[in-house]
Image 1 (cartoon, one colour):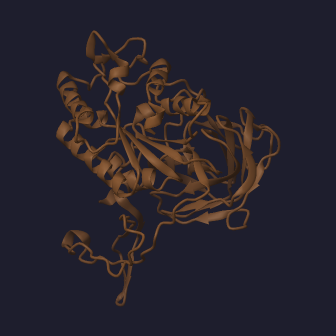
Image 2 (cartoon, one colour; image 1 turned 45 degrees about the horizontal axis):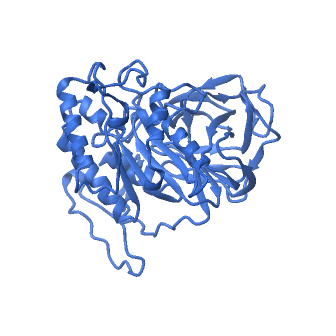
Image 3 (cartoon, helix red, strand yellow; image 1 turned 120 degrees about the vertical axis):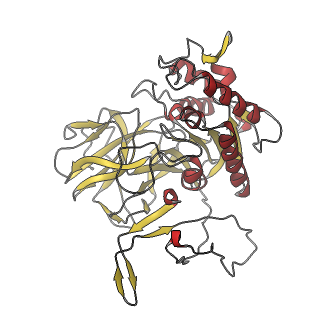
Length: 438
């Protein structure tokens, strides 16, 4: 599927010369046993639809992540217009879950058709606004002060000694020396970040140079800390993304869950990685996976599962809380159930624990008809039943539904749009999670 491609090239080189055919590169992962040798790779039969030719360019083994825990993450939800920026510094505000004595960041040029140049980058604890608490710590990439990220690839910064507090806002700053008019973004940050006036201001502790704000996160997809027990990945839609929660307050249910883990007296304090995308679906793509688009609902959970769950730093458990958008836009319970079964099977094949979450009610929202609710009930029946393939279930439906009318949300938990829980509802969802299940 187009949505799973890593890179689209504008032409193809052949012995007869350059052809104007769009050539796509895909990255496909399969679970293999550690004691086996890969001797051959079987490709699907080539058809006219595939251009008549499929080739293996490279085979490698994904290295296990040792000594790192993901403390913050965001999914690339699409490739859209930004800025435009040139010789500007972007200063992004992100909120940690767990802490550690060293740090590294991950920048992704997902869905892009052109490279992006990073000048200098830095990390700091946030004081207030765009101001840092102390001088930002410079980041390097393979020993250099900046890096060039080719289209469709990612870059990790070099590890640096920096005491990352748990449950704290960080400022991640990077200078964009060249023109940037499009970028992969996470569109619903529910957090204001900052863009500077012209110049490289990544090393500055003050915020005076940062004269404009943005409500999305471009390019940055992860912050890791050294040590720790591993991470829990929350794969979801706008409810996990925190839509309708208080802006700049970190009241998403993943934030509330992280606070519960930090407050526990016994047991591991996992990192919590929020991979929610507003408008995301289990089965159907919103963003097509290629080209510039105003739609930032992401590729489907099935198509982003490897990148947004399996490849996350030190992932140990995946929580899947999706399905309402499939149903609201005409999908059936059978389609959602089939997608959820596939997610559970693929997670288990990679040695991960996988937890399902029941779909919450939304009566009163324009697309949440009685027929949609009947499909929702069928999905939840599957999740609660034996044989779902999941290792456990978080019953968010039971937490937020009105006891007098199960097709709608409790008024005290409703943000007002009847689809998204507000702060109180999100807190109640997080409070209901059995931490031992993670």
